[in-house]
Image: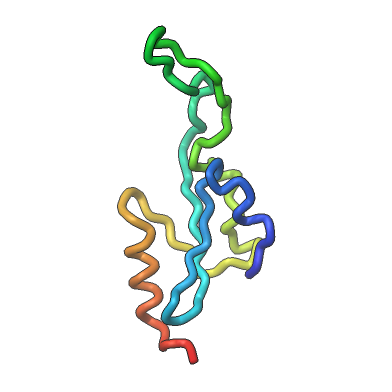
Amino acid sequence: MENKKFLVNSEETGRQIVISLRTKRKYYIESISDSKRPADWGDLNPVTKKVEGSYGSKYTGAITESESLITTENGFSNIETIKGGSPYSIIEQMDAKYPDAI
């Protein structure tokens, strides 16, 4: 599955593509959050201690489950959902099942 829009705004969505140097397989990651960051987050002014430059819903680093592109309907298989921990350790375990690429 190749999705040309997968990494658009990756700093906002938390979407990543990890490519194994050993097997050349691609692994897609999405950070899922139950809710978006509140609309009143931004830069904290050290003098006034007030939030300025509100970013609204941008740069949350995650998406909601309903926004996920990683679905069987989009052609993905072997979908893993993890709660906490690192997705990279799961990728290492999955990748170990495959032989080296030639």
